[in-house]
Image 1: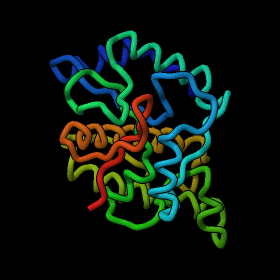
Image 2: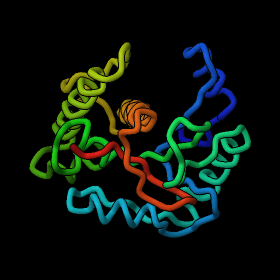
Image 3: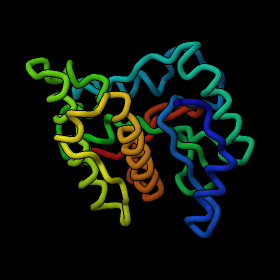
Image 4: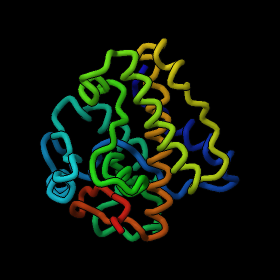
Length: 214
């Protein structure tokens, strides 16, 4: 079930794998160094740049990200990870970097329109198919994403269900795989961010960091 992550446990686990302190944290959630309950400059700029590709952003409100977003931001900033605004120099200091997976996937897969990978929207993507067939289509897209990620991140171990297996599963049961893929995409964007290959859409308070289009 979704809920507030435990930043301390996440950092300890990551540092155990890395063998060194974590310098950059990426998160698929609107964050800001200033309180907000509506659209930010970052949301407007990303929508202006990627709306034509079907990748406009949702509007933040009091509920989403709401208290969870504020607490997560407070927890990481309290541990020295400042929100990466548009003026942040990648790698210069520990940072909390906001990621929006949809435009990132355009670059990763080399496509020109929003990738159909959200299990909860599968019936909308393929209205001519039944629910089981839609789930099968989604996991085929997931396999494409995982293959692309495996080209840039070594040692990924994420055994996705096959298309036939997905047809017998519920959408809720599939969600954990979608979340894991989103986490890997966030990790890849972190790599691009540290390599200076991301564009920051936003202002000094908040920015959405997106891998630069070719």
